[in-house]
Amino acid sequence: MEHPANFQHHDPELTRGVMRWIRKQGIFLMLLFGVLFLSSGRLDWGMGWFYFVLCTAFVIAQALILIPRNPALIAERSQRQEGTKSWDTVIASFAILWLPMGAWILAGLDERFSWSPEISLAVRTGACAAWVMGNALLLWGMAWKRHPGAYSSGWKPLPL
Image 1 (cartoon, rainbow, N blue to C red):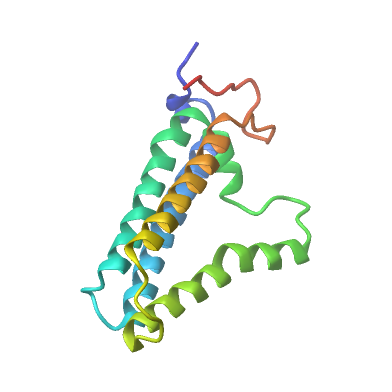
Image 2: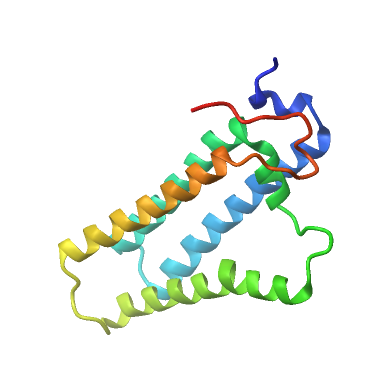
């Protein structure tokens, strides 16, 4: 059986979907960088860099795990699906783009204008651990999901 990492030999549509996902992840990281550091007004913001590096590491982990294991899932999720209701698109855009961007802008402005008191290292460490565990669980779920979409006929995820 051919390894799923060789997805480009299966279906050109699948390859286009994966490449679309990769482009979107690159745009996400550029947007995150710009919003964080433009709103903070400085490039020497340590926690901004820490968050950016965490997000970048998660995107890289997604690519390294999902492209070989479940390319159909990321290809399918890289585009709007047929039959998607307009209200669902609005809700998804808030959950995926507008609310996180608002939080990033607020964090940058908070850094710039020092609105909040200093947050203890213990609280920051706990928040970071919760973020990492939540994203690891999300990634695990995506890696193991048997995606029933258009790109997945006959494809099965590899065991970890």
